[in-house]
Image (cartoon, rainbow, N blue to C red; front, side):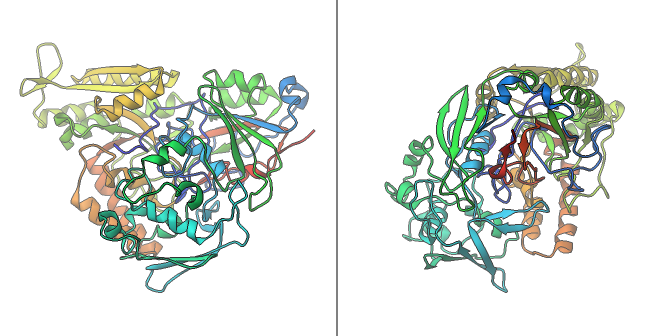
Length: 587
């Protein structure tokens, strides 16, 4: 499993917060670092302002548009006393804050403020200037030329030039690189030779002058502009100890990142907080708020918000939650639908789950409506394809909705050869049908376990849930392959290809389908939206039938934030990162 498989979750995380650091393609990257493809806890990725038609679609009752704080006199004293500091909750990161070398999506949330990509994406998912002020793509869609802004600096004041961009792209083709970047999947000319050690440079990368660099691919790729246009690493800092084939030293630098973003790392205290200070060398001007803190201590998000210990939190958009937030009086409430989807990852290396009929039976036999919609008081919608609800590629045409049908599930299990034994549990070839489920310790996990246990046992499946209070222990268990099912949500997705990465890169254990790979490549081979849309429709129909994972839901959430915060906006593709440098606290 790739390192970006790091944030597991269960069902609806109504009381925890995950800020999207995602956005390289707007991967856990564009605008937020290099983990955009890192999986996140279901339902906690930030999205867009209410002004965005896609993000604000179908909000829960009472959440139609921004609700302004009604009584700022209720603001707790601790929050009133903060004059130059904004505090946001975040699950504890690992501390690997260098893009391309992160251990979790939460690391990406931090690096998203420490680094700025060459190319950002706007609220419609279209490319917009970052460190690069402009770019050109050749007529054959093979050569990309980036023009850097003048006088760019890293946070220590040293200059950023095309040599730093070349260094960044080059090390991602090093044979020792084992991170989650997609740059090394783009078939840059000469990349394979460099990886093999038969070349000392990547021939397709050309530094034209200090502000201009080009890169040539061997074949077109529709996502190349933003994938290549991600974060830039300082050659002087990160490359001083570099030797081809040896990147282990990079891990030692993870805790002391040198970036280009609006903030600099001041101090990381595991289990407590990540302190950042405004970067005076930020290309777009020093942020208005001097200090930004991610509070990573475990605790109740509602309590933290109510007492003023944090300024910002995310909740499921239930009427109950919205009414409770309105009653606080001192928070603005912003509805959004994130550009992601949830799914249950299945360990396809286990024999029983290698059978498509069994996977389909599990989907028919699980009451997803009760878990993801009814229990969330309507603040959710069932997902059946690997696409965000607001994507231009989203479709329901020809898609099986897998409505809850226990009898259909039983028929499929019978057809697959799983017969009910004397104890009521199905057996085949002397082995019982068992599902070992892993989840984190949260109230929503209890909802999932209660429904799944009843549903699966009614089918003759032994359901064995295992709940972890320690997130890292859960991750280790998943990476070790000792599970059958675990809940995930993708990070924020920009391009339709982003939602398919786990099926192409080995992230889903045991899934390797030639037909899917052919369609995936076809979808990236053209930039024509209509042509791509037709390809993705075929992909969605294929995966909807194969079910290498069980698609679960789309979330409807609300942001609640201190009414003193000015200039906050949220992107469906980049979360809060783009607007954060402009945040300020009114008196």
